[in-house]
Image (cartoon, rainbow, N blue to C red; front, side, top):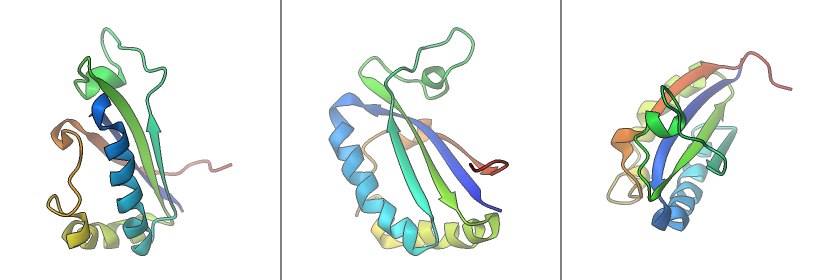
Length: 117
């Protein structure tokens, strides 16, 4: 059964192109470890909430935009086997491929795919 890792983060507007390049550089590496696909979405209609919202969840500042992304794996087992290797891959290190945003405010989680149309 397919498995998805989902992410929400705030990226400075000035770093939009740098984030795109970061993702384009990282995605092929993820695919080497079994990822089926990577989707990166730049927020366009993401209203701030009063109690809960994507902007609140990542403490989005006025000069930032919410990014919503997901990585699709063939299974949770493939994902679990790959994550430790991915995190140890020097091509994904902060020195070789710095994240152009504050990763401490990123929220993420793993999800079992229930319906895939």
